[in-house]
Length: 97
Image (cartoon, rainbow, N blue to C red; front, side, top):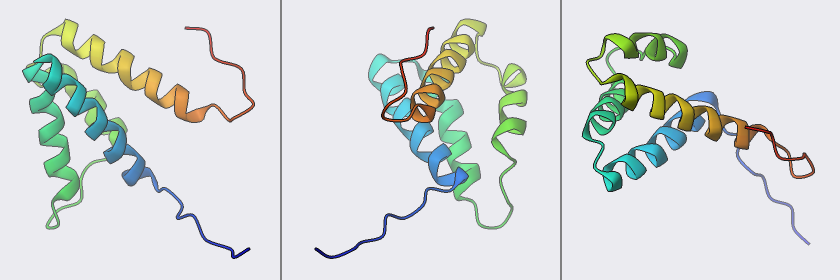
C-alpha cells in the first residue's frame, strides 16, 4: 500500500474554511449583516498588498462594525461551536454546551 501525505492545515486556511462555511449558512438564512462582515474578512485574507490582521484582532473590532448585537452573538456562538467541534478528537466525548 502506498503512502500519501495529508497537507497540514495552517491557521489562515482553517480560518478561511470555517468562515466560508459560516458565510454560506448565513447567506442561506438571509442574515445579510453577517454575510457582509464575512465578505470583508475574506477580502482582507485574500489581499496581497497588505497582510490581514490576526483573527483575534478582527474579532475584537466586530462590535464597532455596525452589525446588530443579536447577529454578532449568533456569529460568536456559531464560531465557538465550530472551533470546539474541530478541537475534539475522534475518541473524545462530546462537549457540554
